[in-house]
Image (cartoon, rainbow, N blue to C red):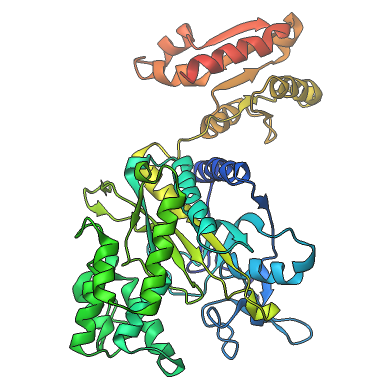
Length: 493
């Protein structure tokens, strides 16, 4: 007898670095994004949607390596052998869109965009390969007034997301000041480009790794907790000390951060220009002193395409997890000026400035400050006890929905106990029951599941429960909607 071939069954598993999301978290995210989008629209920004895929060469030299198209991004070849990549962020697609539609766009062009992005990087706790970004950008407006508007807008959207203005800060710096630092370090010119990038990325980790960690990254390199080694910038001790003095110039150490930076950089051309732009931002925001905005030149946005002011939103409150351990949220958004990105397509410099909100980190922070992911009220469930009465059950659900209530008809069979168990699992506040007896009387039974669950805690036995039925009552069919509305309103208080 031939051996029976075993049927292949794939293992149900989510790809590494990705995760499924359900109900309360998605509802909280949707509501938060709606509030943020409303702020963007109030400031005159129009919504834009771009494809998930872009041609890899359009993403630019600062994102993927075209010779190794899966380095940092997820890529595939089209049927004409062109490489396409899932978008790494929302800024590179914007630059492509502006270049492609340049002549027909109003300039400045103001757009906001919400959507997922993908990064082919090492995943970790809370670090996924797919996440949502929420950006706003102004293309075609030079510094400093557009930067000042974007900086103020950044504070507005973080507050609109649900973070109190006393619990976050927008830190502002300028890439030109960093260029002034490179002048001081003699790291100018194309031959030092890779060293400059390594130094910037090292400086960008100052808040996470502290002086010791950054010293290693600026020197010979650093090994992380997993054993992975990151090559350093190979600076000498004197240059490392200059960088650390620069990083320690922030508001935590000085009442006049810009004055300290001016003293460190001396007469460097880029440093002076960057300081002028930051002072212009301050004078362009009428209520600057009342806003959670600070100048902090230790803020170094990692991507090299920034050319002027840069912004980073960080939370200032402390939190602990359910085991009492401190939780660090880090940056919840960033942005800045990038006047050279559209130039890759057009050949001419097009000024641009934008911000990007870290949706996942903001939601995580809100979960510690408020009940960020409250379980939404489940739908009213109309039990389907008689198969030939399905139209009548659907009519009840339709009437409830027309009155603004969530409602559904159970469609999984006629077993009464299973239907009630389903309603409980759905978090239904109410179950609607109309069997043959109720229908003959022109009535419906309303079962208050929330009250029933509370009362059942104090009922000693099933006999007492059956005799009491305190959370179940009958009304005329015509009174269904009003009775359910009153019951749901009472249970939601």
